[in-house]
Image (cartoon, rainbow, N blue to C red; front, side, top):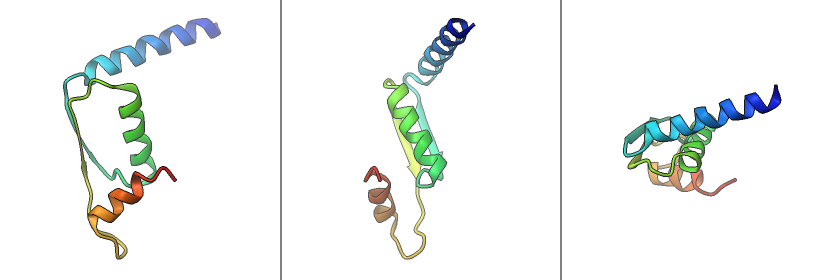
Amino acid sequence: VQEDRRSSLTIIMASISEWYAGKNVLITGATGFMGKVLVEKLLRSCPDINTLYILVRPKAGQSMSERVQDMMKCK
C-alpha cells in the first residue's frame, strides 16, 4: 500500500512539472507564509517554468523591494 502511494505521488508530481513546463506563472501574496511555500515548491519541483512573476505591494513601512529582499533571505 505504501509503495502504491509513492508511485502515484511520483506520477502526480511528474504531471505537475510537465504542466508548468514552459509556462509563465503570476503569484500574488508571495511574501506571505503560504506564498513563500508556493514559490519554493514551484522553483524546486518545476525547473522548466519559463518565468515566475510575483506581485508585491508596499506594506508596514517597507517598500516592495525591501519585502522581496526579506522574502529571499531564507529565514
